[in-house]
Image (cartoon, rainbow over all chains, first blue to last red):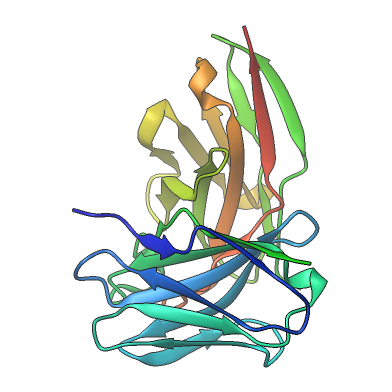
Length: 115
Length: 114
């Protein structure tokens, strides 16, 4: 069974631009969560999608948005990039049906650098 | 406020020695508890998880963790470390039954010396 895939793996953008990151979950999984990892703030939850609906949301500004498609693939978008958005963005997939007892499987991440 | 604390930022251990990583949480009720490992350039891999029942849980790669309610702790242990255990380890909690939001500790970096 293929794991969670994230594209692209590396991305360089400049301030003010926008970026879209993609996550393909494990086949059969319907929940996708996104996390931001930085040296200063650690791992922080962005949002979680299940069956194309956002179920949970973290404390990030509205510049961070996401969506999920009918095939469970998810994208997250960051508009008006700031230097502080430089981070490793991780997505995690799970079945989405067993709550907190679900195992979340993480992808390798997308490394975003904002110049 | 709800929080997860990993007191040790960095631990160095000799190959073959035992390892213990500390994790303390602050939540109103017993949360769902997890340990993840992240190797350089990789995503997170689940080592083990605790929801209820036996307070000593076994995970992959020879790791185990013990939940102690009285100490609000969920410490990770391995009796004999291998060089491949060098990585960053994260304790995480999910506060509620239907909550997919994981809150992570700051992580502990483990260095293994020969």
